[in-house]
Image 1 (spheres, rainbow, N blue to C red):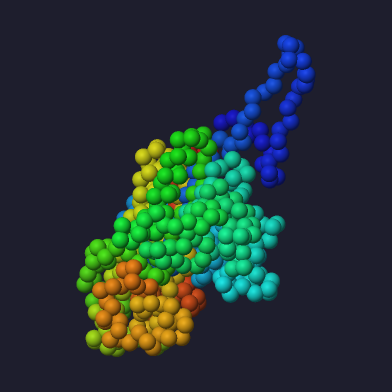
Image 2: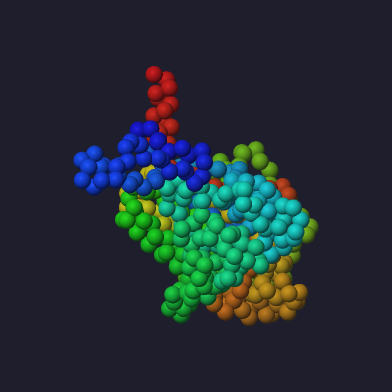
Length: 449
């Protein structure tokens, strides 16, 4: 490996001066200048792919013992490392700003979500210009950078097509390409989208088969293929952050129907089943004890019998949504493998930016905005039952019941909204980098010889 000739302790990296004699006569036989060389990362620098799902509890994915099938995550875990102590902040924007800067979230102004920012220190939603984003650091070291999906770090008074764009991914965020949305959540069937800083319409309608997660995966796959075709010597940094599985839980019906009847026993039984699988997988200690259900969370058997079918359907829709999301993450992984770059791509698959969300009321919601606007009482059991078959469809804006959020956070107490006892602040994470593992083994062998 040749030595790195660049001084990387300062960004932007200073240009290297041209040594030797500078001549001004084109006829002078000594007129010769070194070729222009693009700035590249140090030799052997890997591609980097960071995948961050939204509102997924520790006990939701099958990779960590949950009922929602995530074969892509399991595949990566099988060839990598599975972490059960990845800490998040129990809120979207603080987790994301901390992740994208490598800093404590308060130190980068994100003590809460952007929508509840104040002028108090640490809660302004303004990232100080002395704290550079990770994507900017990598770009200034020669990486190609792109973000697809959710950005929840732009102060609300800057979140318009007029900017200013200092906090936008492709403005001051260090990403050369951005395709996604700026707020905390989005309609999966008819999203508000930006291409860079320009608002754009979705390329198709729900009737034509459009879904946001699929669109984001299409864009990411296309960008990765083009990047490697045009810049094979330059590594990429891709941040893939779908709006899934944040509410609204929108998913094609066939994905939800795969789970038909699997949640009829309710959240108490589901929590016990997940807890047992987690012990089998070794993601929790064999001697662990399951935390009890708090009185604020109703028992499944105490829910009205006539409401239980719609409650079970809420969870079927959520499970289908998570599996659907993992499927499209798998398309990214397949594309990277097809171009021969998988072994030297450092992948972080973070299964949730916080614990499962309990914003859906005790009965769940067909339209979560009713609850946010103080009108949850409008969604009576009779109304919810009448809308059961529409859950997850373009006519809905749905959320599951509090009991399901609690079950999806197994084995921890509480949920995203009550962040104590890890329920909101620990998420499962997978790291996959075959070349890195081989390098470590080679270094270990050489240290023993």
